[in-house]
Length: 330
Image (cartoon, rainbow, N blue to C red):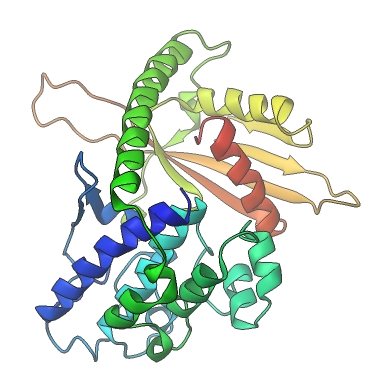
């Protein structure tokens, strides 16, 4: 969405965090899914299930969502709730500006976060497509991603940072976002109609034999925002569109293998001089919600989980990003 829209978002989040902290409350699960906007792009934060007001500067409970979680939580350290909310806000801001996650998770051994920790910033910005971002934005976001929570900006420091002091036309940003929202809704309606038509006119079967029952410990599986998707179309559509992506957008570099017996789709890429070998398995789980009443319509839903078994993480995320821009993940 770009830096202007990111600044518009952050200006509202500054007010939200300032208000929460003024009341002695920290959220501990800030993420895109918990950010709501009305038709005028006014922002509201939802889901205070992990929020607390007790000893907010000396917390130790494991709370949050993997891809938004500050490193001190992952490492089991005592943490300051205000600092971990700032880290999560940084992740949200990065996604709004760049359209992708800044890293899979904030761990020392995670490829992208490790680049930040080791000061390989040119390489990091190249890998994440951020070469042309402003120096002010880069400075701010890296401070928000600091491994040491005490080095992250406070709400007041965030407000006074040079990036936030840059000229911003709030009315124009709001109008542009509202227009984009209307276009997105129209496109979603069109996509829904196309999807219904696609389900009805697929060349092959829906391949529901690929769908697995949810295991008893399914709730213990962490939802990976990068590679897990809840979908309302059949696995057969995914299979066809994987092939469509491979043939139309990826020069047939992938092998798409279907194994109905083992209930997975495998995405496989042979190693070349330019590309490392890659193997990803796509699995489907039935997460259809039970209807409240017997005569209510049942809408099938599946959780598609894409598990990388071999290959370079950055290379896989690049392919995944292209899928998001072209076929079934868009």
